[in-house]
Length: 152
Image (cartoon, rainbow, N blue to C red):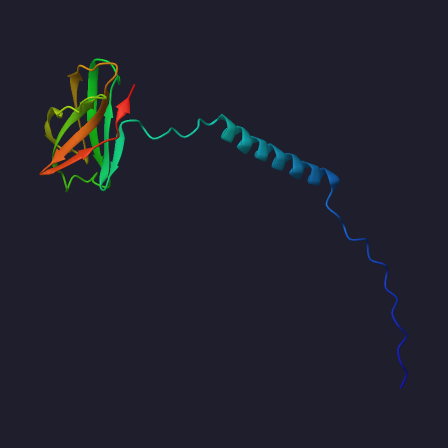
């Protein structure tokens, strides 16, 4: 038996590398996308700090807003967490409390109201001295809730 002679094959073309223009296009697109993301991040405003005069409660947040250290209209608001469906509405009494370095005053009340959609807010005029601090107050049943003190 004889062994057949080895076959001669034609040399294969070299392995083809991606075209330089295609690679340059990919790099340009990637750099442009990174610049767009970095520019958007730099242009976006920083996250706001926690509002002054607010206090986190177990099931919501109580806030008092107004011109601290001056006479004006103040608003006490309460928002319940996860109560937007309106099934678990509650009645609350909202107001404020003032203090200075000598005395802490009894609460002043804006009124009583039932939450709607898990939120309620009441306003009123408060006469304040420049050296006084103020905080929001909420009463539900026999329990009194307060915010942090806000001072000018």
